[in-house]
Length: 312
Image 1: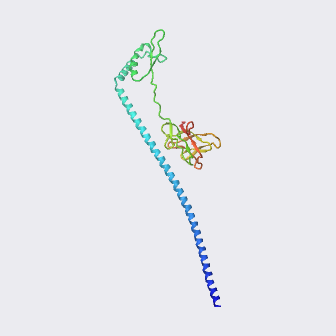
Image 2: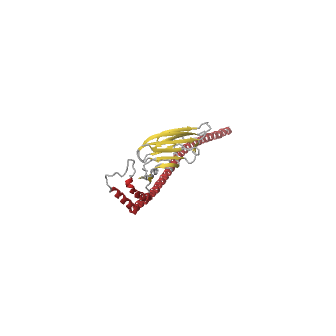
Image 3: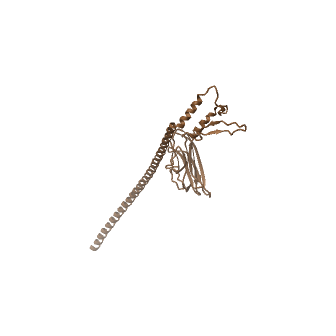
């Protein structure tokens, strides 16, 4: 009897220890599961933070690249202005030398003597040629030819009458330097352009006024007016490209080209007429939510281009 009591006593103790051990293990497993769940949440937060940091890093890189491009543009404009100033100084020196030359003084004296002739007589005929009575004007011809003034005459007639001479202006007339126009293209093809990416047409074939930057792909409006912009994007077989014309970060017009299953290179062209103010910026980019799929082609005989000009 005593032996049976001891047996059941020991069995009860072992059973209690087993239950306690199982409960402890269950608690440990529950704590571990909670810890794993917390680690998953922390991991997701960390990934989100890393993604935001990468986005900010890309934004800063793009801003630095744009800033470098603008600095380069300013340096180019500075060098151009220095050349213009140097040319102006040379022209001023030539003009001063010309005014001091004896040839110009002689020309003025000859013209003054002609003006002092009898005012009742007509020096030129209806066609604008000098009359025979004033053939002495040939003395001007000798001097003016040294000054770069061109003359045109009529061949001698059969009657033997000598033709009169007529003074003309030079062919190289000054042109007003207020034109605004540019034409640029990509120097090479571009693979898988990302969303919200500016196309930098880095070869400015024409850039009248110098307001397009081949470093940033941005046209900066110099003066208020109405401007015309056109762009063409070529796409390789099997790909597609969305593009849009942007003014100061706001899309104005868009275009789409997709080759799909067509075994050929296709293109799309966009055109927009925009009223701009001085300082407005215009460029071509992919939309924020649509990255290019495949290759943007820009190689002979195909060129992806961007152009614009001031209408009025």
